[in-house]
Length: 341
Ligand code: P6P
Image 1 (cartoon, rainbow, N blue to C red):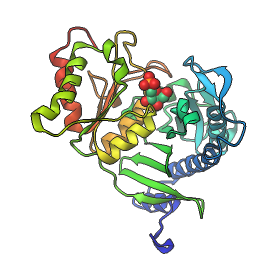
Image 2 (image 1 turned 45 degrees about the vertical axis):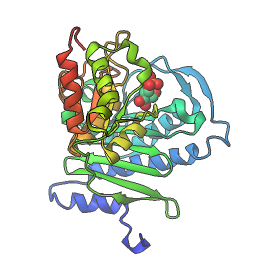
Image 3 (image 1 turned 120 degrees about the horizontal axis):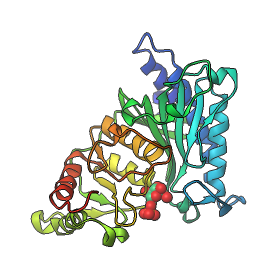
């Protein structure tokens, strides 16, 4: 695409804002700052093998997971940039036990809060597999002029104003959804800008790829076992094999699902009745994106976006992607339900 036809993410968000005369551009300011954080993190991710930033940080986070140095760097970058942003009152992060309410006057008068997983899939850093930053933006429910409160971070996903991710893969992309739809922007290193590359992204109603950690299958419910058998025998039915793909990095598996169609699952199992993935900064943002693109996301009983969170780091099972594939797995899960999922 010639330079003259490049539309930067800033230009795009300004054009989108102009569609709503009453819009103030505050949300665009947060998206711009998340893009800035993504560029800063990207610079370190691209050099991870060259600087003493690989390997474990020696601490563990609230999830009990070894903290990699790069996810601490990413977390600090997002916290600092969003604190300087004039529209963010505070953050919730996978890496922090509690939310952070910025205590300065500017932030107390800001309308939004942001939740994020600063570097999702960080266990893949040392093997150079795609990793990403996932974010979710809510309008505050607490009183303006005062620091934000926990209630701001415990809203159902259907209240989201915007959500997205930055994927540090063969190229660096920022994908975000608002109620207007889903758009993808690729980082053009020569000008240091995210440029529109995937306008109006849609999640295909059907797909041929199923994605989950099949190593856990021995612990799955009867319904999930039956569904996996269906996936593996599907080729007998229609001679078109279903393909199994799993990168172990939600951002990468979800980006593929959005681009190619398919279903990503992290089901409940006998040792993890709530699955593994976190509702507020993994499942809700991805559900908001996929549903804005025409797909579907459920925990096996209700839409992910309808779940009212009770704690910042709660986990939920997730089945997400092409609508017809999500409905198909739900048929098996419900038909064979012997124990609540
Ligand atoms: P498992 C990464 O740790 C993560 O949170 C997601 O990005 C990914 O989808 C999942 O966990 C991988 O989990 O148990 O298959 O290694």
